[in-house]
Amino acid sequence: MISTETIVAIATSQTISAIAIIRVSGNDAFTICNTIFKHYKIENFVIANANSHKAYFGNIVDGNEIIDEVLLTIFKAPNSFTGENTVEISCHGSVYIQQKIVQLILHNGAKSAIAGEFTMRAFKNGRMDLSQAEAVADLIASENLAMHKIAINQLKGNISIELNNLRQKLIDFASLLELELDFAEEDVEFANRKELKKLLVEIGEKVTKMSDTFSLGNSIKKGVPIVIAGKPNVGKSTLLNTLLQEEKAIVSEIAGTTRDTIEDTFNINGIAFRLTDTAGIRSTTDIIESIGISKTFEKIEQSALLLYVLDAINFEESDIETVLQNEKINTKKILFILNKTDMKPIENIVNILNQKHLNFVAISAKNNIGIEELKLKLVELSGIEQLQQHQIIITNIRHFEALKSTALHIEMALQNIAINVSSDFLAQDIRIALMHLGSITGTVSSDDLLGNIFSKFCIGK
Image 1 (tube, rainbow, N blue to C red):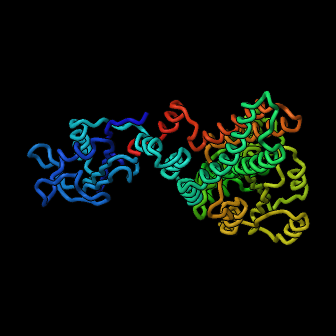
Image 2: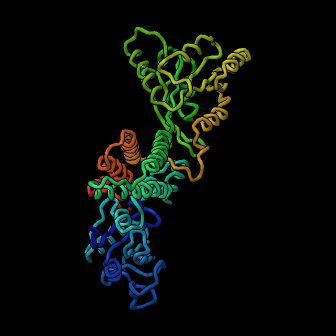
Image 3: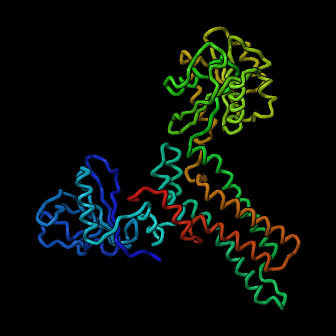
């Protein structure tokens, strides 16, 4: 049931600022705000009679006391963010003024909004579906260009349009299967099994393709995970410090200085990278260093890209083979970094790397040589810049799990068609698939699910 209570919250950061915005939404939003707003010219100004989507200048007053000069913007239902009558008050950013205005609105009958309540009302009033509502939170939290683009695409409904198309096709066939159940005794078949199989294969492929983008989406959201590894003293920590442009890791000529992982995030061309420096890989009897090396391989397995650093001064071709033959390392995601190239000629090493058809960049981390080329290579290998404008990328774990569950029950339905099971069992698989698909956009939802999703929003949104 949609709440009819009027809610209020500060929609901007609750700190001292030039301006702040206080948002009021609900059936009594206009009446409540009318009691505290005095238009600078019109003596008997009535908000309910004013034009929607326009701002009006005046004072917020507490009796005869002027609290602040404000701009009051009116949004009439259903053409507002929440779908309800909404007022936004732009006031000066004094914390006292913000709190005073909110207290006046509460005193006149509103209640304090909880986290995400404005967006939840927008969802419940049909202004957006659930995946679009979640995109609002992602847009607010976006810290890089790629995440911003994905959130905007989702907010525009790209995911919803695709899922709704698939769901409607499945509903059409599900209806025919349900009809068969009504005529079970007559053994009739309304849903053509060949056509149904063809549709299930199509939907299964599209759902799987969408869920397969989650790994990339997660990298975009949290930063592409990159691990720097190599033998001790090849310049791993120096490379980390150079990329981060700060002295994050201790640099020493003593082998085994780095004994634990060091992590930080940096940004290239609007793409976030999560960089991890690791303990040097070597045989050792030191227990602490051995633990650090074990952690190195754990991080390598979790990474999207491995920067394996080679020392141009002490280069040995066997180092490359050791890495390529290591079962714990995915050779498809290695970028070899030939470091200390300012210390000696590297033509022979470059020839070896080229002959092996390996991805590599020659640098001097200490002297900042080749670092810009390395950054461009990281952007290229991330694959993020190649994303198409309207490409669907899954970044939400809830969406990913729902898509995986959908694919599972689609596959079960296909297996049941193959063994010619009865309509009731087939219909059950399709019902469950439809439920999981619908849970993404909120066509199928529960109060507990909604409460969990919107509790993660900021108050005022």
